[in-house]
Structures are given as structure tokens and as C-alpha cells.
Length: 112
Image (cartoon, rainbow, N blue to C red):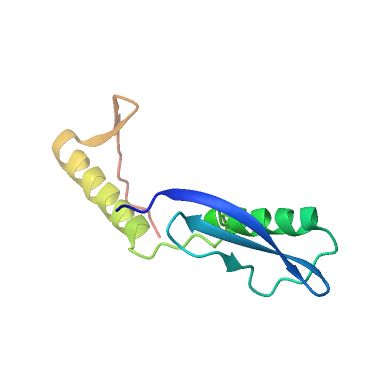
């Protein structure tokens, strides 16, 4: 026998009002809402049970903003790779390729 998912809600009368109860599967017993107070009307207790089950089945999604950190050292790796590529291009072509054009690099010695 497979358990079929069928949320049900029930109201339990208590001395000071009503409490909501629920069950999620057909073959499971009803459970009272933990930590809930007694409600003056049966409709309020039923709505409280529905809200509890909705929150339990669909928890809110939390978004966290954290500072961006280069944990793996990718930025440094990209800089080193770009420097190696520029050095190779300068050695082979005598310049660096910028926007599909070769830009010649001139090196001058400064007089001190």
C-alpha cells in the first residue's frame, strides 16, 4: 500500500476554543500544530493549520549578499596568463594584438 500525499486539515475543540491539526499523508494520524495557541473560532484554527502546512512545505527563500572574494586565485591567474600571452606575442610578432590589429611596441632606453 503506497502512501498518497493528500494534505488534510481538521479542527480540534479544546476547553478555551479550537486548535488546528493536519496530516500530509492518508495513512498517517492527524497532528496538532506545535506551539500554536487556541483560537476563538474554528475557521481561524483551520486557517492557522493551512498557513502552518504551507510554510512547512514551502519554506521562504533567503538571499544573502556576501562580498566577492577571489578564493581560487582566478584573477591572479588571468593576469599572469595575459602577461605570458602578451610576452609571447611581442616575441613572435614584435607587438601585441589589440582589436585584431598588431600594435608595435617600441622600447627606448632612458638617459638618466
